[in-house]
Image (cartoon, rainbow, N blue to C red; front, top):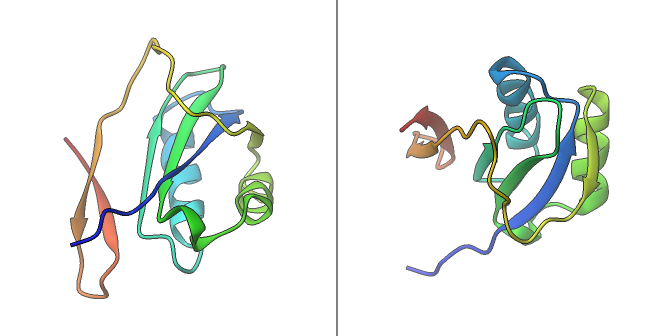
Length: 103
């Protein structure tokens, strides 16, 4: 089984886990996106990771998060230590996509 490549984005405007879930759900709704994870940095730059990397363009991610009230700041390659980290894993569902569950 081939490993999926990931794309990462810095995201601002999140203050709590509800914001995180809203952002993750919005990106997961994009066609072709199978997994989404986020390290929450309240009132700072959170790290959003999605796979596969080529499923959507940066412009699509930016527009989707813009509509949800969040700002994509830049691509990030490595997460920096955050004050609050949410560990997210995925579980398969019948349609072949995955849902987020807390680890």
